[in-house]
Length: 435
Image (cartoon, rainbow, N blue to C red; front, top):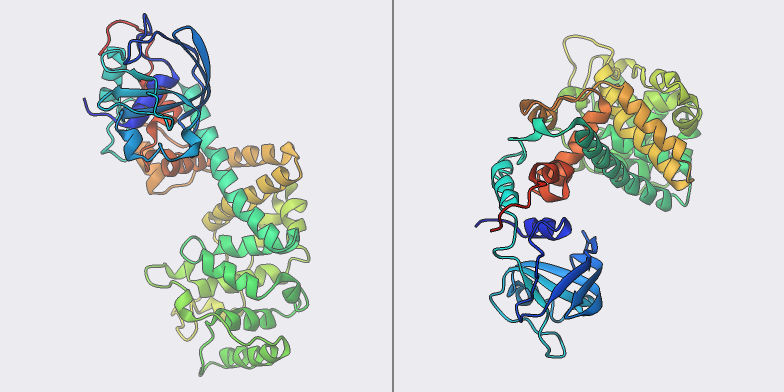
């Protein structure tokens, strides 16, 4: 039979096997008192288990493998973390495993003991070659399980983003204003240029920009200059002015180097998402925000302040340009579109709220994240379309963010058996037959 090791972990976790007159490979009587806690990080698969062997209760860990010889293949024998394993659970005992002291490791072989219906469900419901392995049965999973699955994936996604923000907070020595500023630049990078945007924010701190908040052209000169995006020469008067301004502030602030154009990605990026235009939009936002943090954290309780903050128009030069020296035939405002505004709410505001509540142990901020996401429209991208193709539609931002987290954390790396959807599809109340 073809199966993955995580299937055996699921079988042990939920005890999907015949435990009547259970015996180890040496004939010892085995009784499972406590399965243990599934360990998804390094170390034995199940911690704090209790197993009775020949009438003696052993407290320790349980390790699960397809073959007993995997113990040696995975080099567990020389790892102190595995010294407390009290039971080795395997599909097939193809090799005797010894403890470090030379005594045999108690081993339970599951071959011929797993319930047949569990086998059938596993083989029928999960196709690991598909983008969504559970596509065959996801529509039949109860709504409550699907909701809890998305909720778990969403929380994990927010916690992952929260770790990034907390690292920024540590780098800024606890300065929430500077952290919010850097996180805004990261968000405006929209994946392809997020790291470059973050580096630019580090080079030009928020407190420095605040000194020139009422001088948008100075802000543009400083940011474009440090970004390495200003041309060396230009025939356009406005660009010539920015070059002169940057040269002045470069000397004033002692900037000895700048980023290079190679730091930025233009190839394959739509003009509306060019880093040059995004920086111009950031300047327009920063020029009208006396306190970025207040606009995001306090004034945004009804969310109108943050929306107003992003509904800006860059300087006149950018009505005719997406990049320096390349005018467009048709003029446009080049402001932040409604779709980009929603993405910024999802990827900038919500993670910042979540982190703020987590840091100060104020759960109401995190609840606001969930409430806000449920008010937003669902995103539309290739991941969401994969779920829609199997009949699972995203109703709002809560659903779509949960689906993105679910796909990246579980579906794509094929960690299906850690997911409640797959667990629900495989689960069976029948105890008839073993295999």
